[in-house]
Amino acid sequence: MSFDLSVWALMDGATPEDVRAAVQRCRQGEHAKRQPDHRLVAFYRAITASYPDRPAAQGTPWEVAPLHAAADHIEMNLNPACEDQVLLDIERLAGEHRLMLFDAQDGSVYPPPARVPH
Image 1 (tube, rainbow, N blue to C red):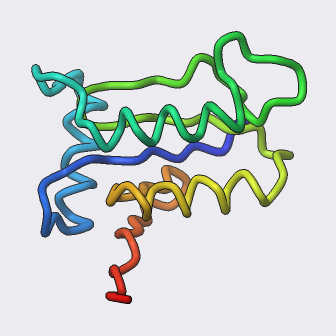
Image 2 (cartoon, rainbow, N blue to C red):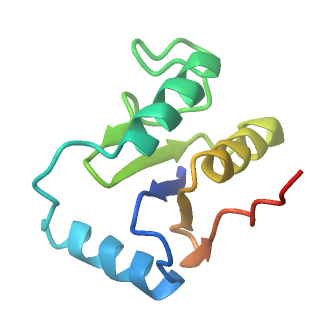
């Protein structure tokens, strides 16, 4: 069984409840009719540069490839035996691109870390 995560590009100030509502709409077949959010495009390019999904080569962390990409989210079905570094990279890239991370196993939502001015 795969370990499922998704990243969501919602409006600034979105709450975990907003993410869960978007997940529910997606599961019911309701999808945004717009161009993909630029944050998702950048995330997809970054994560697949390290872990290609087209074609999915042996040894990649993806249980399902290619990744499911929509206008407002990307779903990643990971092999449960994937290395912890993959999860750390997903979390880091989600934060860098201001995406909310949804853990389908328990419904947890992780907002991007607050940006600290330098």
